Image: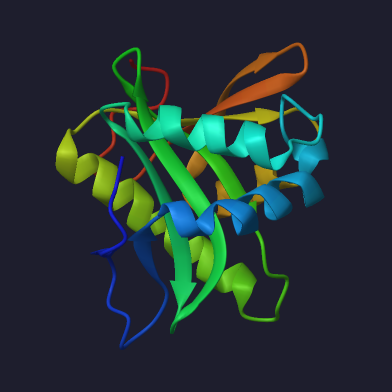
Length: 168
């Protein structure tokens, strides 16, 4: 869980991350519902379901949800949580589809990985629906497919300080 303060990056020079706060819930819900086909749970969620999820999120240790900011404007969100000894990237949503938001999300992912690895030098993975165009985006940002499952692919960050691909 995170607070709304600046967590990573410099607001004066480019995209940055701030912790998601309760006031972000409606925006997050609308973004999530607009991108529902990219989620394993693809049903639309209502405001009450969003509220319950956010309350649960606030109580989980080593679970962080960030707003990707460009100047003072949210462009999307990214989450990372500790699961089975690995950092798991989740809730990646490019909410605002502006010309610059794509670059902001890529920079946000880099900041997210750096944030997680500073907390604990553990592998960083993302589990993505098979066929999701985001697979190529992850690859462009340092992830590689390490396993194909029915309906999904497991990707692992292969950055310079990462564990070798395939190791846990």
